[in-house]
Length: 71
Image (cartoon, rainbow, N blue to C red; front, top):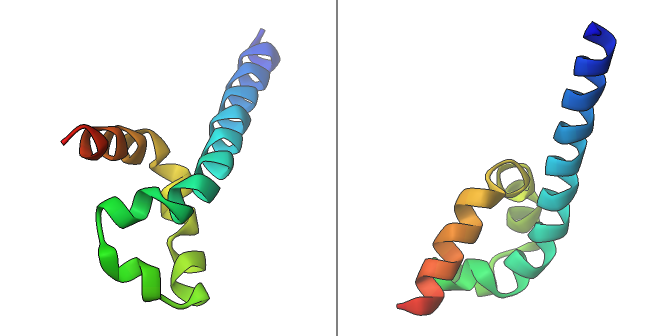
């Protein structure tokens, strides 16, 4: 029983991270510019640096991106 619960939790975490990784690429191309125009001229290092935070916080960033698009 415990193994099943752990397997389900690991699968859910994997799906969450996979969605975050997929979200990162369109977000870094277009979405982040709605928050900060300075990112257009930012070096590649900065874009790599925000990768973990974007992957971890993708639901919040998606909500903020959609709200910014409506405004």
